Amino acid sequence: MAYVPRIYLDQPLSAGQTASLPAGAQKHLFKVLRLGTGDAVQLFNGDGQRYDATLEVDKKQGAATVHAVSDGPPRGANICLALGVSRGDRMDYALQKCTELGVAAIQPLWTERGNTRIPADRLEKKRQHWHNVLISASEQCGRCDVPTMHAADTLSHWIQQATPGFVLTPTATHPLSTHPHWQAGDTTVLVGPESGLGESEVTQALDRGWHAAALGPLILRTETAASVAVATLRLRDGML
Image 1 (cartoon, one colour):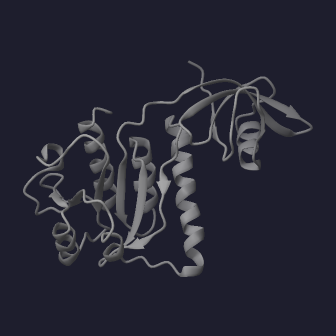
Image 2 (cartoon, rainbow, N blue to C red; image 1 turned 90 degrees about the vertical axis):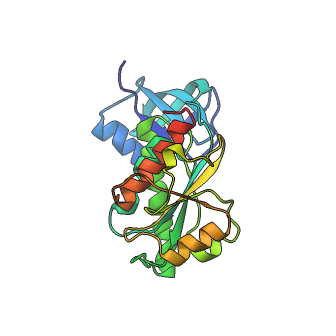
Image 3 (cartoon, helix red, strand yellow; image 1 turned 60 degrees about the vertical axis):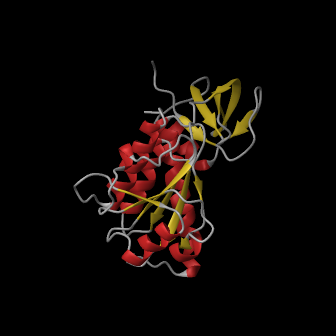
């Protein structure tokens, strides 16, 4: 099967519609991939539908005309990843891989041991960067939706109103893969930053009805733990 590039457009789409392509997409399609009028492209806007389209180039301006609409891949249960914000590329890696694995939403958290603090004037820019990571990963993996990126919050505030799920801690008795409290359906998994969650944070979660879960006998990096946790829940849900 020939490779068909996928482009995310933040706008309503429908059969027969001709949609203008953003500058970044045009550069990738026409200058990097060297595509032109008549070549196939696949569009999606996050509604779960796949929009097969054909490129049109007029005076170096690009558009795509939708000629078929179909259902995208099944989504399965909604998994929310509550993740302690970490430094460098760790956060980006976790977001990318968990998007590929099918996570439905991301909740960034400021935690006790997290070494990352983003000034208020840069926070929205960082949130947009994270959202772009999710879009890029969705384009690559074939998803027709994009995970929801919630606004960053402190763990102590967020957990007061969050629906209890699983909190990862290496001291847990039950592994996530066989946890007796797992039930099919929507769930949330809480993963700490590079230094892990503090004891008081784990206690706070447990006191509010969360279930402690482990990922095995080894200590995983935060980006690895997040990916393994989402993959484990997707596997238990029958989506892997």
